Length: 151
Image (cartoon, rainbow, N blue to C red):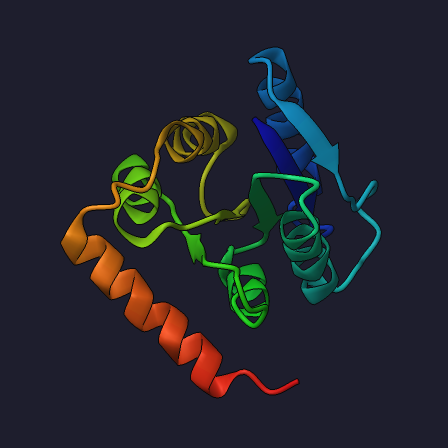
């Protein structure tokens, strides 16, 4: 799978570790930065991943900041992106299966790399179920997005 990854300065080390582990598992990783622990603004990381997904350069995204919250909020401002902070395996696969989540957000100051790797594995291994009730709910989310999008 092609995965766009990014992180701010707080998420840099975890992003680096996860990118290496994902490559070792055979995934194609598009590393969108940051490339050091120098301070950067997390919304820039979120937009970079969102643009990669919407541009067809990646199938899924993974963003790491200190808590995961900031990048999730920023990424969800982009139409077509469904991002969530997940700090457990169940939420990571359930959000894909039920909500068609396409961007996983992690908090490097909240969880360790081993848990992050398990969560990323669950996220990448899951697929949207397409069940009628989940599709109906996703359609409602998409309608909200269309109604409130301002170009």
